[in-house]
Length: 151
Ligand SMILES: [Zn+2]
Image 1 (cartoon, rainbow, N blue to C red):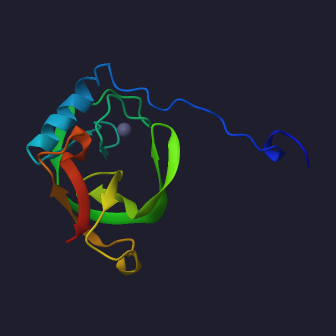
Image 2: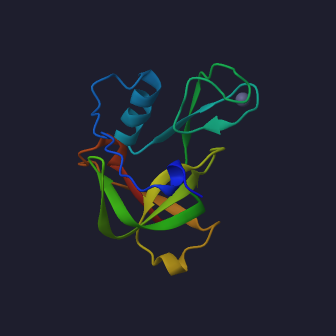
């Protein structure tokens, strides 16, 4: 079938927007926590779920979230995948295989997306215990929480 999806084209989408705006108080507090090797979430007074990264409202309850809690630096591997392509400035390129995963910090309702290192992907299993590894000197403040490795 011919159509939009049948024709080949390469969209030139500028992905390199940069970050010139304030992140918002919630994300800033989360990032400040990372600098102290703390993973901070917010608990919903309606459903009791602790959300991380912290956000201002619970999507389910529509309540404003005010109660900050410190989560465990260990957690559970929920899912993972191995990437072979990386993207920089809107361009895809071949990359050394790397593993990314969803790790649910102890005490959190939802997982964080994180790099996974220190284990052969073939040895990883959902449900495995993982621990946070920190890089205080990371250039990108999100990457102060550098990655997770098996605990
Ligand atoms: Zn809620």
